[in-house]
Length: 241
Image 1 (cartoon, one colour):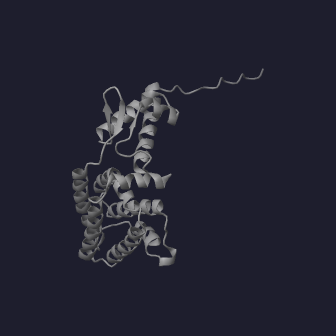
Image 2 (cartoon, helix red, strand yellow):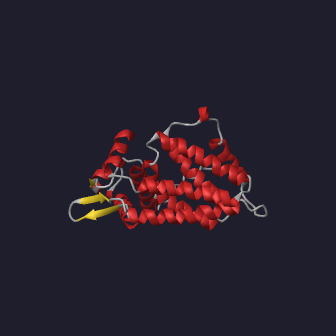
Image 3 (cartoon, one colour):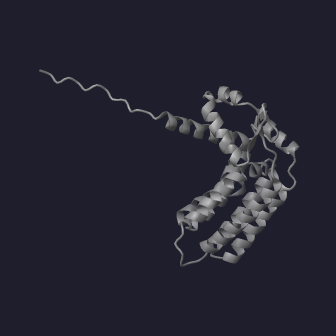
């Protein structure tokens, strides 16, 4: 007599876990919307609008928005939905100061010959930034992503996991400002030149020079932050389509 096949089992899904997963997805998407200028400071919206646009229920949308509120991206408006918060330039100044400390420390560590560092990661950076002028990318969005990866990789390659974690969090918080820095071709060209000099100093184990170049590079970006206007943000949104 043939053995009856066992009934197919389905894994029970905890509704709370499902909502958390969807909330994480909504959270990540809304952060991308801000970083890519689909949502800009001053924009107002409702939970229903986000639910319809992303095709999810209001519960994960609300959870994501409360999380973004805690991180200073949005605020709830009494009886009238939500609003993307204006830039906090004092906070950006502080974050850039912290960034400078972390990255210059990493530069010194990368140049210490007795320290274990990730040489493969440095080579990957060289493959992007140490190229002839004719091979440089002119895609602002791509260069902005590569720029983030350059600085995060420098810190990660230095081998301190906690330093790298703090730096990643910091990078996440200043992303929109850095993306604005790449809306002009001269800044793209300057980034290639400056990154190349930093990499060459690191590969030659010249710690002081690498730290000095990084400090100047970050200070230039920090100075550009002070010039940002809401008009530039709206122009960036228009360019992003």
